[in-house]
Length: 631
Image (cartoon, rainbow, N blue to C red; front, top):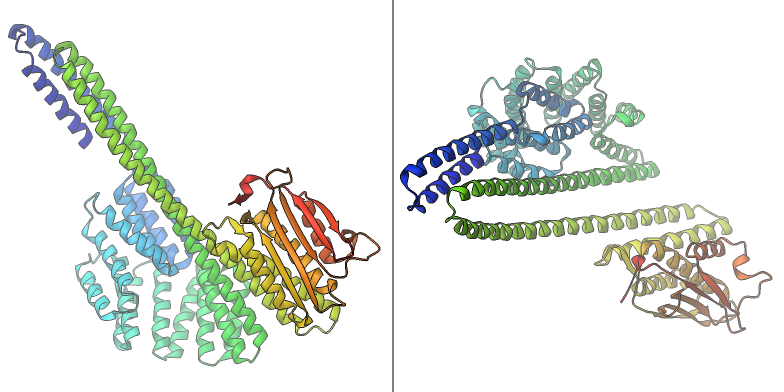
């Protein structure tokens, strides 16, 4: 409506200016023209107003409140479903462009991500909610929700006295009919007093919370029972803590809340575990593991941690180590989920702002068209004003273009920031892959301790070398400024150093000479090239110098632009040479099969160098420019 009113004022201003610039027209002739002009402008104004009102979307406020109430209960008993509901409501109401709806959904997101412990996202949503307050007048009761969640986030377990003071103030100012906010305030106060060791006050708050929950749905009674169980547990009132969690579990069973029931089982098992009642704890953990699909990731993380401690107390190191790995896997999944959610929200906000920009641009175009129409009508009446209006419009257009250029520059900066964030995420992925490969290598190392068969031990050692070679590539990608390419010179030097350490027990003085140009390869090519060199190096170390203590291995990797197969790889030693009955690549060993498979994958040609002064393999292959970077 502000835009429409502004257009109306502009029309009147143009009319007045036109009247000033036509003193030569006689009054008797100008009056009929002015009447027709104002009549036309009046109809145009009514039409624009009607279009403006018709484009505003309406929503069912009562239905929206019911959806929010359902979402509140889902956050207590099934947080995965709550996540789906949040995204559904986001999509459903995105076209309404209603700041009040977006503010309410953002408040729910703050509560949701607080439950997951994703404090980076909590801070993001708090700042977003504060921005929404500039677009509409927030009701006092709605603002109290943001005040409560902001106070909890700002404290984060550091200043309970300040949090207690702020929560009491919110409690005193809150509408007494809003039982949900009153309940959340009571639970926050209970947690604060429990952390301070003032259990009497904490239990008083629990008592008030139970009275409120009794007037609400069963989900809130479940929430209060869990909070009460935690307070009793920290107060060392184990029997009462167990009663509260049993009560919560019974509510979950009655209402068929599978995820909530799993949370209660995990809590009961944890109480028995940390009160040294191991035989009573284990069955609850088994119930959780039996229904992993109906268990939240955060609850699985808790159970795996408890089982790690349980088997540590039982002196079962293997099982304790197993659940330690499982717990770390869940931790990685939770971290990835937080990162994915944050990236999803940032991209969604960027898309929303882009759409808003396009919408504003379209509105600008429409406004220009209306202005042109008015200028045409005015030109019939005031010909003298045409030149002035043309110059003014050109000036306005230049200003609009300048503003658009500035907005485009801002968008480019946002895109650059988004790309940088994705680059960091890609590096983190390579880092995690490297870590996971190291874990696999460590597991193989543990298994090799119990292997007595020399052949099996050799196979395990070769497998470890191949895994370490691939892990080294991911480490290089993590360390590089450009995480899409591996710098082969640095990679080769580290690979040679790594393999020299592995074969140090051979007690031979082997010199490895490296001549590699500054070549960067994408991972699809770096892995085959790296593993070919790894296998050839390993072959030279093992077989080339059986009758000599000193030897030289030469490695070259070049980019010959003049040839169609422009990349040339040479691995050669000055050992005893190859004297097998079959060709080198026709042997039935695993290492040779790996070399042959990767040569075929690279679609490469190869030549043997077996002149009696050692053995070598010369490989030529081509790489698309998109998968390499030659400096």
